[in-house]
Amino acid sequence: MPDTYDTPAVAPIAPLPTVLVALQDPVRLEMVRRLGNASEPLRCTALYDAISKSTAAYHFKILRLAGLTERLTIDGQTCQRLRLAEVDAELPGLLDAVLSAANRLSD
Image (cartoon, rainbow, N blue to C red; front, side, top):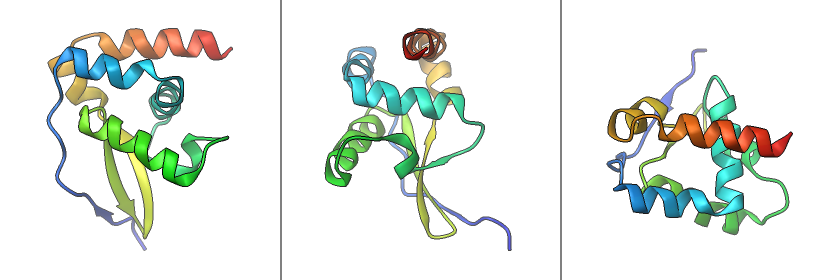
């Protein structure tokens, strides 16, 4: 059976200061790094380690409202997708620079 995607309305890409505030938190930065390294949407539980589900939901909301991520339901599983192309169209090069730096820090 093919994957089915159900997506709620997607937030517009927020202004640069809002995006930077969303990325300044280490937990959210790690979530974005993991999404940036993935070739497809990831299940929410693959994006965090040592925080509670409610705390993760809070961080997902901040990223979503900044326009950085999109929440998808794939075959009944809640997943997140990094909106790399959309963010790059509004804020060229930002996510490439952030992901490059985040990957260097995680090594």
